[in-house]
Length: 430
Ligand code: SDX
Image: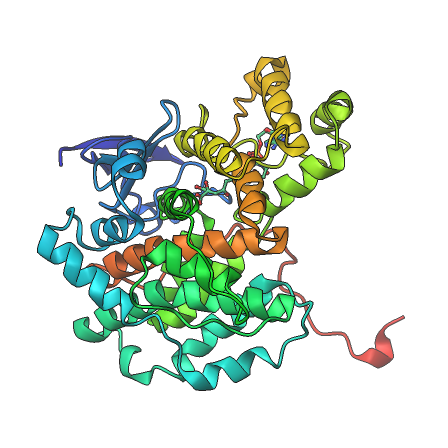
């Protein structure tokens, strides 16, 4: 990668900082020596201009609406690949050969069962607990059951932990759903593909066999692909920071799940569907558009806007197509939520405010309609996001752990609090 220099003058102290170029995308100014040279920090609370790491996994061009995983465009992967193939690509950097794919599928499939003792874990939760609360707790508890894959210095244990996370998340997610609806847990079946296995664990009941609909299973698999990884988003940065202290991978993924839960991030799919339901009909859209523009109103159009995409989120386009496929297969015509979503998108994309602020639908705008049609309650939407994003978190964590220059992440601050002052005894206070 090429390098050049940037000149900076701080209180008359002129310094030079190295500028590094990646393979594609913006250059970076290496400021690691800034504090040593000038005694000053940089300040960027939302990390809007900060590259936190070097990575080779995912590239996003927000202005052009481009998303690449190890160089492959998301639309090609979603069209031609399957989720476990994308998992292999994210983890190892190349598309698998036929033999590698068969071996990877075999190994993941045989890690889908959960330690039987863990099923008792669920009974400690209230039935109406939010499934994301259950996911945070149960995934964090995996490190209490799988001691043989928590030593991050051992490449073999890292590989086993990675496979276990990818394989067990569908089982845990399905168990969270079954516990929520009061139905018995359904065990995975090794003769089913990843998405079909998950749908069956969610929707099969002991009273009758669950018939896999290949169109819906393909749509579920594609939804997992669309959510697999997304550069240094908030939850991935959380996993990297947790992992930088040497915490075990299960604890790091639990931290990522907690961060993803927020409505500004992975919780937006649940919030977007609740918003569409609240709007209810096309004639109420102007009222909500007005609220979204009103700075005194905290309301935002959920599923719109993105820190990086200042153009259409390429995943949203594929998601919209999948929505129509699923609704068509299920014979759902004139879905009122879809009608509101399409009209809301049309109005927002022609409205000066949204155009000027470059607010486009993101992946969360259409995913909720699709997941609802597939039979999931809104409280499960972010769980499905976490299920799919686990491979991205694991791939980014693995890349960080294997980086010989990796150090614990420890940002500094701009302190604006009280200067030093002496303690005042209680007897002397008012
Ligand atoms: C995901 O980072 C990732 O990659 C995330 C993700 C992934 O795959 O990991 O892509 C998944 O999290 C997608 C985003 C899901 N969130 C939502 O849909 C929630 C609604 N969107 C917003 O909360 C917001 O757009 C964010 C959080 C997504 C981005 O926030 P930013 O980059 O901090 O932008 P901002 O809040 O500074 O907004 C810029 C301006 C503001 O107006 P001004 O103060 O400049 O006048 O745009 C306005 C905002 O008020 N704005 C919106 C809006 N989003 C931003 N106004 C109305 N509705 C919105 N949705």
